[in-house]
Image 1: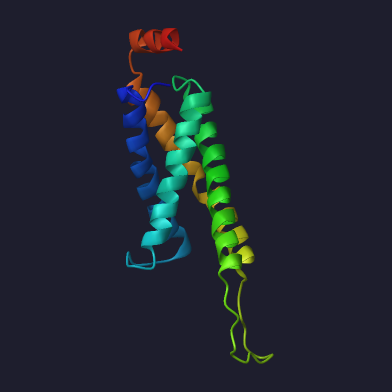
Image 2 (image 1 turned 45 degrees about the vertical axis):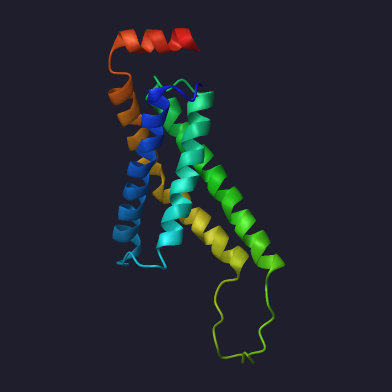
Length: 157
């Protein structure tokens, strides 16, 4: 994988497509939400996980076979999101402040940070399936649509 390879950077640009598709699916499946300051960090985390997942899939699999590329994007994006959530939970544990508010038994507190991370990861596993598939398929059609390009790329590896 050369960083001067234009196909790699076009492939990384497709992570924006994956991010938009994921946000769209989340809006349809999970209910309506507005793009405001609360949702922007989630969009950045989704974009970073796709960037990392796609870079690892490009490196380990031949991008000319879309099924392997799609599964690589899917699995490595899940791993990247898991690592990001572990870092966030670790920082949350380090910088947590004790609340002095009295919480009575009849008030529902909600998820802990770790519980919320597990829920986010499970939702991510279901939602990122389709955008990863679409990105892998578009990559093979757009970047490797000629057999000459495929043979040239495989010879470079």
